[in-house]
Image (cartoon, rainbow, N blue to C red; front, top):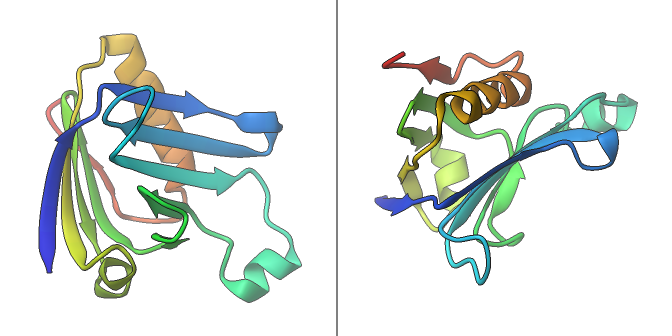
Length: 132
């Protein structure tokens, strides 16, 4: 297993087409090399429930490295996040079991990020907010 750290110079919180919450942490706005994207649909149908897609979705730098669920702990602070992945998720993410993301947000941006992550991780106990 391995760990990785990077600075997210671009932190995005969106609701594309009004169908899902999306939070992205990218090393830069354009020509991105490293990113973590989290998303969750506003509503789930029977097929989502049957296929285990009724939770959050994570993507690390490529659609090839993505899955539903798999975060054991997401510790959010005003200047970064510490993400710990469950073993099965780590295997899908190049054996990365821990990710450290640093960022610089103003207070309003941080509150918006916290709210978006509350929606993404609803029904999950992995989100922890520290240092506020």
